[in-house]
Amino acid sequence: MVQHIRSPFRIFKRGAVWHAYIATRINGRRVVVRESTGCSESDAATEWCLKRLQALTTAPDVTNEITLDAAAGRWVLEVVQYQSSKDSTLYRIDRLLKEMDKNIPLSEITKNDINRFIGSCRAKGRGPASINRYLSIISALFTRARDYWDCKVPSYKMRQFKQKEPVENIKFFTVEEVEKIVENAADHIKPIIWTALYTGMRRGRLFGLKWEQIDFENRIIVFIAKRNDRNQSVPIVEPLRRILESLPRDSEYVFTGVRGGKINCIKESWRAALEKAKIPYRCFHTMRHTFATLLLQSTRDLRLVKEACGHSSIDMTMRYAHLVNGRVAEGLNNLFNKKPDT
Image (cartoon, rainbow, N blue to C red; front, side, top):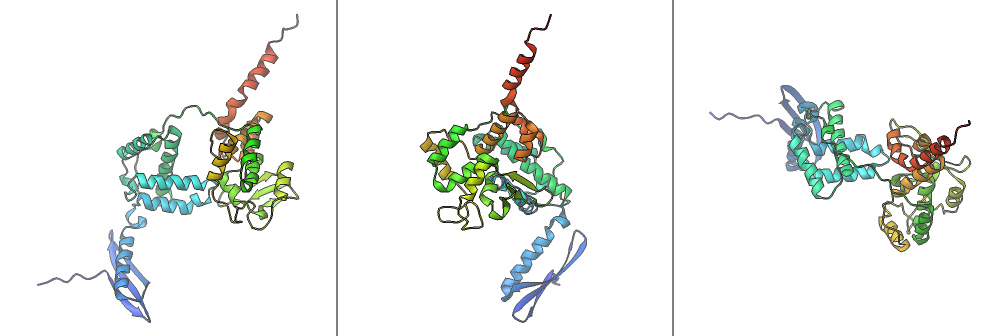
């Protein structure tokens, strides 16, 4: 006697569109779905049902499993897209998914997998700081999956893989070097360079800056917080005010390209400017370091620099502390090397 196995789904037509009725058990729980397939052909509707069934049986809330690829995509939607430095994070996520098995469940990522990834990074010439940034992404995925999605993750701690970083030597430009770079830069990036120097704003914020964010009357640039961040404002110093007021307002964006569109990248123009100025190449982010360095050298106030840069913690600002050590030593020597009164 032939036993007929009942299909977990059936399709039926309403008008020109096929609809699906799916009824199955997943981990002992009965799951029923009634949805439109959006398909006008029965074969396509059947294929849709198979894919929908697979999605149901592998859903995190059913199996408590999620793949590296799915976790990264969900993290981007929930967290990364709201970050001011999202471009660099998105780039590292893309590299991570290409260099690790993106289809592996997070719970199955072993210590050997992590060590192999670290070895691969070293083979590609990535330094400890760069490797740690990739590891922090994996750690963030584990934390998000465990605490927010109730998914299974490894029990080990990612901090055990953290690479020892050398004492950071902050690279920055002098004001004279910045002036030379601007002199040799293409016209459309000159105001961007000056704004970076006068505000310390990150590249993403500069490229996305809109006229509606600029309050000339109160001389501030306003950033409205997304999610749980706080609103921020950046002062407009007088030289920057003159530069901004001189720019044409033919777009909602303050800085536009040679064709008037939104700027998304200035890497080639930036590199060309440094080459013409005969200044060794440093990435555009060095302008932010330059802002912080010059401000600290002028004020000797780490907390002021923290506030101006929008650092989340004083630890980030402490990277610049060595720049004022010489002045501290000079002050102590001036104070205590005087001969006491007799």
